[in-house]
Image 1: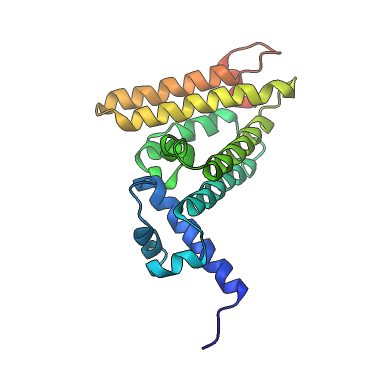
Image 2: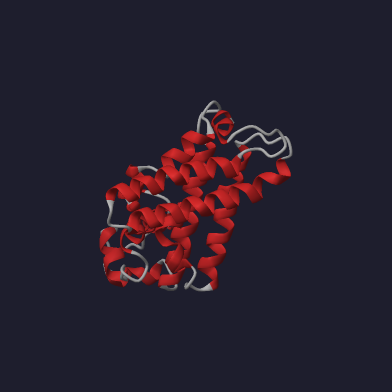
Length: 203
């Protein structure tokens, strides 16, 4: 029987990473067994170790891929797309209600902190690239201040989304999202030019 070539193996690995991303964000790392992750990719459990050394190896690959996709989406936004649009899309009802389609940080952060170093390194590197992609859109007079402010704003956005998903009161959840938007815009305001948080919408 002919063995599959390298290209086929790469495509299969890619399919596993892509389908696992949605499952992990929906059900969590501990709630997603290898058998389920492989079934989502249309493969048998026994094929797993042909592509990954361990479940943590797969999780690290998924985290890196998900964050890279997020970075690419931010970089591909039209030049005239304001940061407020990005913030409101992140802290939206749609994003809150569909974690499988959304940000890996908000969906997996509490579990990533308990994973091995490979997963945490993948998260650190990928998250900083997302942060810098956002910072590049701000057009700060002093670009060196962008990363710190975006880190603070993004951390607040992730926490806001997690809390909005956790509470049982729909109105409270909606209010949390809107307050999170205002907090993020205030944090992202360029300190070197003054103005209000609303000015960020035009950056």
